[in-house]
Length: 200
Image (cartoon, rainbow, N blue to C red; front, side, top):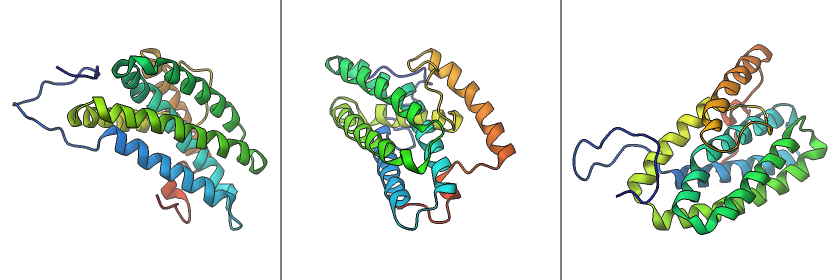
């Protein structure tokens, strides 16, 4: 029996089946390193804020949306004692999204501090999740997280629902509108869009 409640998934074809993909803990850890590296790059003397700030905003918006759809609910279900910490992270996410609205170079220091707190808080929850979830569960959650990120908003929307099931319905719809605006305005939204993407 699964330790972590998962979204509806097809049955495994045979005993011992291992799904393909990366596990959610590895994905989140990597994205945290990338976000911190991007922030360090943006704060450096050769920073290119014109392209970097929209990419940071989009990367964080996608990341927080996907975490709230799949990672944090999994942590809440698997680690009931951590529910208050999950609530605190959701509240901190809303504050971070508010800080991202109209992000400027002047506000970057505050955003960087909020991101560092996010990485520390969520990172500790991920470490605990690894101890109770199976590798198969972590991979299946990772697959869901990556799908959610691709459909997620690329702009901050702190007023949208932050917990399932509503965020899994509303966020992809808002994401479609954001992506149309991105295409029309030619706004960069991925690390690969930067002249020098940060190393993780």
